[in-house]
Image (cartoon, rainbow, N blue to C red):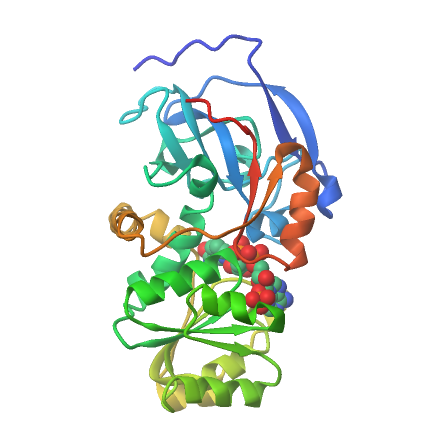
Length: 348
Ligand SMILES: NC(=O)c1ccc[n+]([C@@H]2O[C@H](COP(=O)([O-])OP(=O)(O)OC[C@H]3O[C@@H](n4cnc5c(N)ncnc54)[C@H](OP(=O)(O)O)[C@@H]3O)[C@@H](O)[C@H]2O)c1
């Protein structure tokens, strides 16, 4: 297919940063939109789902390094506007979601229009509005990859979910319930207890001291410990988490909210004594494997159709308030996803 000609005056407002720092380094700038290259498509963005990874990237503490001026943003929903060479399976006007399968500095989706790799585009589930769809894929693909694809959690299996009010934590609670497993939320925020119970956590344990938290988890899991711990905090508390696991249990560490990831201990006594599996995990391992991604996508779409899952939105900001949205993301007040609406009116 030939690449479509783009009017030279086609412009887009885009968020960029020129140096690492706090939310205030984010600037709204105008740029001329390039035609999508081979294997890319241009998406008119309707809503952006914010991820903690983007705050880390902005601050210079992420896996990928920014090249300045840098774009950012992994996840969005929108409408296909144009296809580059080889763009098959989609047509202009299709409602889609962009999933995190690319370099942020190059393809970041904090913009009115973004060219993204076609491999990072999925059809928007018909059950969801553009705003809600922007809260779907990062959270549920990440949680699915750990709970289903890796740990193969089943009926009655207990799972400890730390940072449970994060978008991924809430997705994990919903998926655990869908699997018939027992989600145990371990939060450091006592005021979120009722909301986490309402969100489906079977038990909510407020983390105070390591020994008290471990004792409460052991009790909640019937005395044996849990089959899985799903943790995005890392750092010294990993020793405590290993103590909560049943023999042959699995600890999946998938983030560094503590900032102490590099000094995460190896919990020797627990790991060897109980034959634990300790694993690092990035959702990219799932997304880059077409078969695993296909299975994940089918599972999540089916769960949505059955109303077993529903993305939780904490707060919605307009595009012009991207700085405030990042401040809120890092305030840890949220319960679920922070969304930025780029178009307040749907365009179809
Ligand atoms: N590996 C992957 O592929 C992958 C994919 C997606 C996300 N992640 C990671 O998953 C984590 C959650 O992402 P998100 O975008 O869903 O985050 P988010 O919504 O911004 O998560 C905020 C929540 O995390 C908890 N939290 C924040 N700082 C903490 C700290 N220092 N110690 C303990 N808990 C803390 C708090 O929950 P409570 O108040 O309930 O304790 C807070 O409300 C991030 O670390 C992110 O990088 C990893």
